[in-house]
Image 1 (cartoon, rainbow, N blue to C red):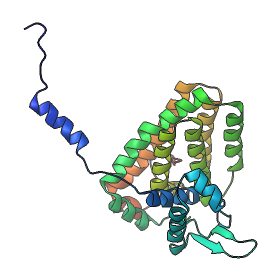
Image 2 (image 1 turned 90 degrees about the horizontal axis):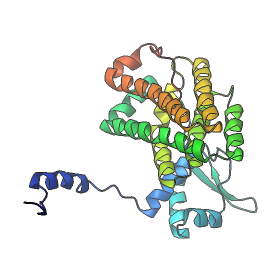
Image 3 (image 1 turned 90 degrees about the vertical axis):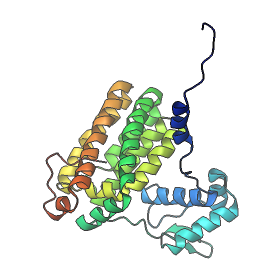
Image 4 (image 1 turned 45 degrees about the horizontal axis):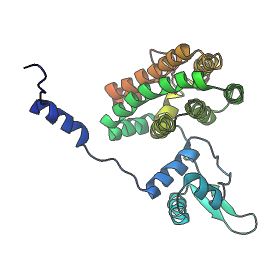
Length: 272
């Protein structure tokens, strides 16, 4: 009858229920602070031997209480990541960033431990990072262009560990230049959780080949952003991410057989 409203079918409502009534992923301020400090260290914003910003500055920037910050720092001290130095030149310093290249068996164990969660991270990365590059191209300033180009130049010809750090900083800087806090949070979380596996892939098939391949891909992305070509920036980042995805999924599919033989892969080494 014309003008009559129609109720949603029960099965449609039931389907929506599965969307909303899922396990809750919630972090306390303490957990979020630990994660943020860990990300800064692992992804190279603060390096070994460097002092963290003052307590007052961190409380202001993170918008947490002094108690929460101190508890987070204490937790990272217990893990050997931070150390506190007393006296006039005292403060909290980075003791270790845990930077190392995984063995084949360690990479396999991480993949097994992550299980289906690794697929979810790969999916999020493929959805988020090309969009970040696209938005960065639309919103970049001349200072931002200079910053990206300086980063690329700074990490040419560095060690394998530094290569991974440089790669992370390029991706994070692009996300920052996209000017979206939610996008930035997603990129930080994925980069942090995939960090060790991406470092492992940084040396497939060899460190020098990986560095050359990585430099070319990053250069293509950065130049597209610098020229404000948002479509090309998105496509270049998507291609870059897809190469890494192929390698990660290859490791997942082949399991231990992919890690027990040569490091050579059918595709050129993917930068992360």
